Image (cartoon, rainbow, N blue to C red; front, top):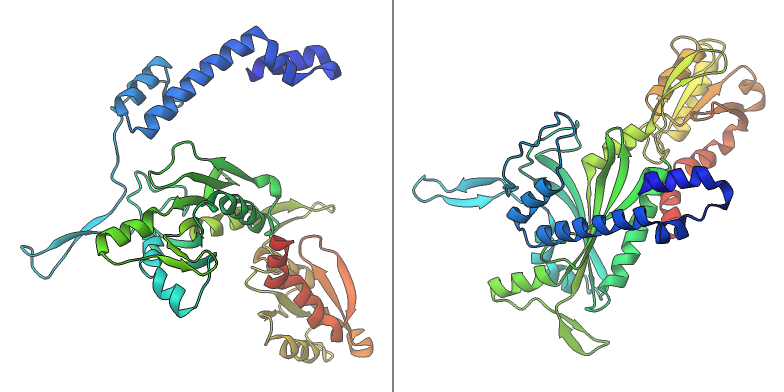
Length: 399
């Protein structure tokens, strides 16, 4: 279909109406009907876990392996994605247990503890971070797909019937959080789920353009009231919230945001690493980390190791070190020192020169642009605070 559209666009030029062409062109309509049929069969088979229909669809569409070209597929199989182990001091008395594939259930079990002790009113969220385990079919792509990983999750409890609106709100808010890191808005996209988990009524992924393609870094799910109601059912304990505004008790619905810490780290590193060729023909390696996340916020560099410049640099370090993680470097030329700081992602370099002793000013160099600005030492703290503040980064999310 896209080939037909591209061919027509080239033929008709500026007068081309793509929407009308897609609605009227016989070949496009024929292919669209085929696509719709295949898509409907696929969606139905996936939601019903009908492996025979999935295999038949692969055969009917004559799908081949993109690498080898073979059609010799195995049967469609369900993989075991959980790790099992035995708990007990003796082999005979051991009980089979499973390592958690998510951190969420601890939140649900403790829902009433948190709600009552914190006197929380719905809507409210509970967030936590911890280890999770997935029996991945193939662990690969560096730290993107691992069997043991660090997961950050939030369960946001809402009134029944309001979950879809909250789902849309958190979907937009979480994308804004990722984009606020400054790696490029075009590197993120949504992938809405067609096959939903049995407990969900809406789900989407936020994907990032990794070096190996767009991949999921976070999932947002509307989990309905399934988790709390199941814990209530099997524990025999009432897990409900009394809403004073409605004067009734109910099992809250839940919006979940689930993000892999390792994957976010990988996306930030991949998005920040650059190899640049400068105007003078030289090259530099620079890690353009978001300033709020950079481990070293600034480096103080005396121009030379004499004439009182190191002592003045130490004064500046002592003034800033309680609020920012700083480095002091006096070895090699100033250019080589700049390159070292570029490579570890230090956003700002403060150069102390001979004029500093007279005018109490220093040169601040900006990592990404390599521009330099002369500023008063008295203003350094405010300038750096404004640039590296996590608070300012988070403000972008709620603007």
